[in-house]
Length: 206
Image (cartoon, rainbow, N blue to C red; front, side, top):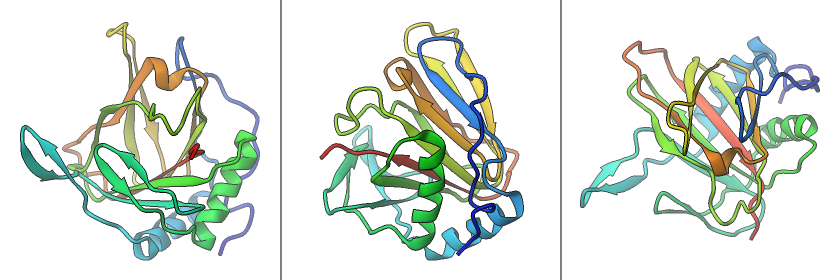
C-alpha cells in the first residue's frame, strides 16, 4: 500500500492538449515518481495478465501487448471482439482509482490495463466509443514505467494531429467530445524504451 502523496494529489487543470473538438488534460507528475516505480513493479507481478488474440485478414494473431480487465460487479465488457470477464479491484488498483476520481470529480467502476513489455508492443488507432461508455465519457489514463508516445488524430481533419509523451506517474484525462472526434494510439517504437503499464479508468453503463 502507498501513502496519499505517492498516489496522487489534486492539482488545478492544465491547458487543453487538443486544438478543438475535444478536451485532453495532462498531469505529468500526478503520481510521485519514486512511488510510481514501486507501483509499476507491484502491478507487473500482481495483475492477472492475459494474451488475447484478434482476427486480422482471417488469421488469429496475438494482441501486441498484455491486457487485464478489472471492475466492480460481474458484467462482461467486449472490445476489439474480445469478451472480458471482470476481476475485482485489488486494494492497490482501488487506491490509484480513487486518486484519479478525486482529480476528475468522476466515479469509475472499471479499468482496462495494458502492459507494454517493449517498444514492439503497441495499440492501434481507435476511439473509446463503445455503447457501454455512452455520451461524452470521461476516461482517466494512469501510466507507470517507461515513457511512451501517445498520439491523437482528428477523424475528419486528417492533418490535425497531437503527440504527447506519457511519463512514469502521469495522469491523462480525456473528456468532452474527444472520443467522438479523435482517434488515439500508442505506436511501436524502435527505441526500446522499457516496459510500461497503463490503466484506463472508465465508467461502464451496464
